[in-house]
Image (tube, rainbow, N blue to C red):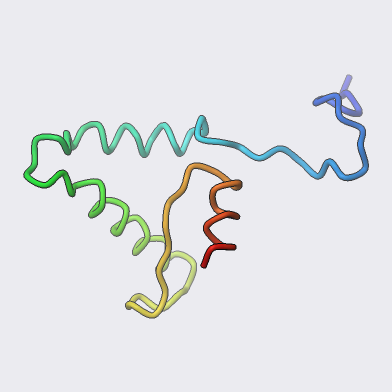
Length: 88
């Protein structure tokens, strides 16, 4: 039997559930950065280069120009992304 309201929220403005930092892709990203041991490299900049490379891959996948005309940032969830978007 499938429940009508599995999350228990029947409010008409409840549009879904936002997955936070505990998502499977977040676990994979943390695994990759943990294997790099970015604390052992001078300046601790390995995570910056990893984020830039992931953003380049996403630009190619989504069909955006692969140059400096578009950029992005990896954030922990929708709330932070909304705050960053409003700040820009």
